[in-house]
Image (cartoon, rainbow, N blue to C red; front, side, top):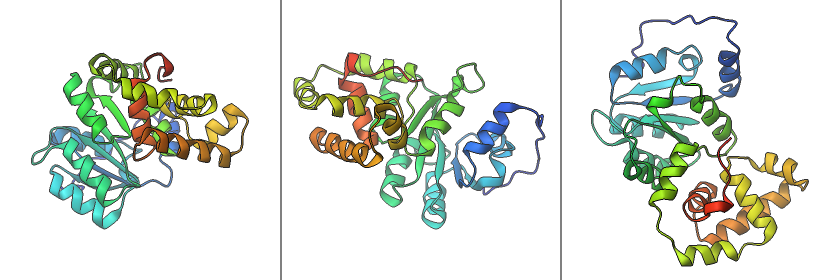
Length: 243
């Protein structure tokens, strides 16, 4: 299903949230991979999505081909696909083109699927049931992930914490962080970018970059996304709620 959207939706032009989303997506390119064709078509027809949509597909193989060809900024995916599995797709996209930010919509609201999505390196995780609700998860996910942050709302964090066993080795790694490194990790896990962390802590962006690298090294993780996941699972009271 390659971008076969025949309708053009015209939402109210004075909608402030629409303008905000449009600004967040400015300059971005998008690939969407969703198993439900009605959901995919509705998503693709959204006024803010359509001008930036490179491809709308329903299978993992099609999505991987699009990522290889287009190297999109954003991949929106659901766990259920016509062929393949959305969470496995995210892992493969990370290997093919790591700069692509992956945001997944989960239909199944259970800890097993949530933890699987985090392990796959999802930059943003949302429940489908939250879309269109007052929580504004979609908008917040765009805000947080646009410049390299992550977005895991409180419902996601709660499931992860409840199902994560106490790991003494992980606790020791966190205890080995300096006070400033721990503060950087708190802010990183809240989804803040290096620039935002710099403003928050009144230090230079280069200092923040150095501390982020130190945190990643001390925790033995691959990148800032994995550091955030590590902290959510093992940080308990150290980690703030999503904003």
